[in-house]
Amino acid sequence: MPINITPSLGAPLSINDGAIGGALGYWDTGSGKVSPALGSVVNGSDGHVYILAQASANVASNAVVILTEPAMTFATGAGSWTAPTVTGGVLSGQIAWLQKTAI
Image: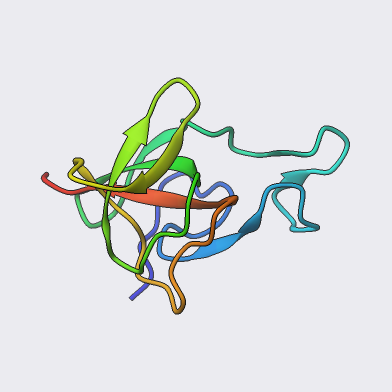
């Protein structure tokens, strides 16, 4: 079941949608930046908090990750966020909604 936010903005929380600068509907193609911005925090309908971040290395599907601020990048490690469950994982340079592991 897809997880939603209110109001709905950008990509669904349950998927990963490609590298920054890609020709996707929620990109500001004039600036080459994603909208909403990296670091945006939302509450999902499943009760979890999500943050939008960019992978700094390849990350396996559903892996626990470390979020680095203020760059809003993530990589596999003993952190408090979980990468989305997607086929092939999240590749370096791609963006994804990370789920806060504990509610």
